Image (cartoon, rainbow, N blue to C red; front, side):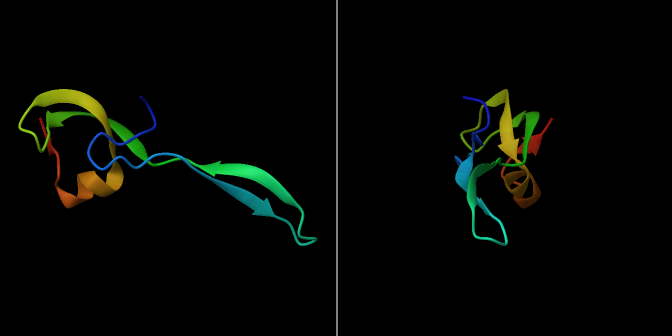
Length: 63
């Protein structure tokens, strides 16, 4: 359940590093998540992981 935003569902994305010689190695992009205690869009107060984009947009009221 960790590494997924509890508001928007943003999570880990997979792709490749591509070198100058065009060799590809696997890599992943991890969402910028913070553990937050606050009031969520459903009206409940709880602690959960939220991405910074949702925090900046004010979708979670931090308590």
